[in-house]
Amino acid sequence: MAVEIITGHTGKEHVTAEAAGALHAGVIGTGKYVLAGGNQFAAEIVSNNLIKIKSGELVNQGRHMRIPVNSYEEVTIQNGTQKMYRSDLIVMRYKKDTSLQVESAELVVIKGKASSSIQTSVPSYVNGNILSGATQDDFPLYRVSLSGLTITSVTKLFSVSPTIEMLSKRMDDIGKVSTAKLLTEFQCETNMITKTADGMVSLSVYMHTGAIGGNAGTWWTAGTIPEGYRPNSIVYGTGMVCGDGWLNAVPTAFMISNGLLYLYGQNSAATMLVINMTYVAMGSVVA
Image (cartoon, rainbow, N blue to C red; front, side, top):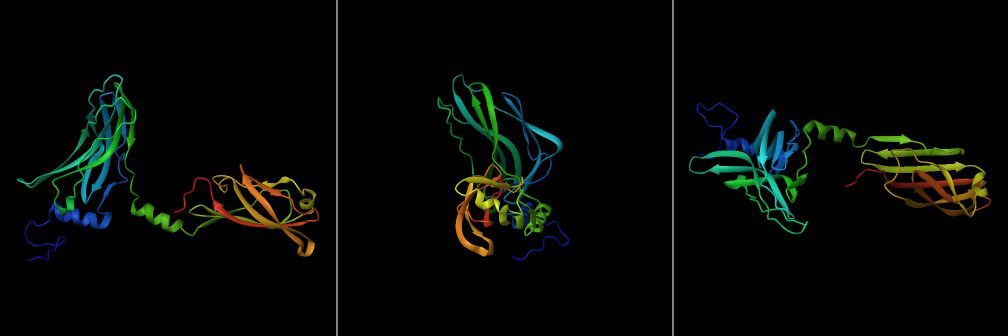
C-alpha cells in the first residue's frame, strides 16, 4: 500500500526518520539551513589547532542536526606550514550506513592544500541529495584560513534562516511608512519626507520664499535631510523654480550630499520652488 498516515495511531511503530525529514523539507525547504536557535554554531578560536563550535540547530534537506544549548564541539585543525597558506573547511557531515540503516551527523574538518599564494582554494566536499537516498552530504559552516602556523580567520559560510515569527513581523512591516520633514529655515507650503519599510524615500518640497531668487547662479543649501532618510550616495534631480503665480517657471538642479540638500538657482525672480524625488535610504537594500 503506497498511502501512509504518519501522525496517526496505526497500532505499530511506523514513524521513520525519512518521513520526518520529508515533512521538514516540505515545511522549511529542501536546502541547507541554520536555524535561529542556541548560539547558531558560533565559532571560537581556542588555539592554532583547535576551534570551538557552540550550540546551534540546522536542517539539511529535512534532517535536523544540532549541538544542544550549553554544549559545544571542538574540531582540530592540522598544523600549517611555515611560509605557506591553506584553507580548510568545517562541515556538518551527514552519513548513512546502508547495511545498518543508521544515520549520523558529525563536525568534520576537510583539510585544504598548502599554497605559496595567499589566494588559496577551498577543498572539495560531498554535495549529496539526502532526499534521493544519498549516503553522505556535507554542509559547509566555516572556512578556516591559515598563514604559516597561524589561523588568521574563520569565515562563516551560512546565514541564519528567519523564524516564522520574524517573517510575520517583516510582513507586518511591509507597507508601513515613516515620515519626517526637511530641516530648513525657509517657509514651506509642503514639506514631507516619507520612507517605506524597504528603505524607499520620497522627498516632496514646495518652498515659498523670496530667498530663492537671491541665490541665482550658485549652489546653495536649502536644508538638511534627517538621519535615517539620507541616501547611500550623492543623488541628483531636477525641480522647478518660478515667480508668484507660477510665472516664468524654469527647471533647476539639486543634489543631496552628506545629508544636505543643495539647489542651483536659475531664476533671479524666483520666489517658489517645487521638487519631488525618490531614492534609497542609506543602509537599505531594495530587491
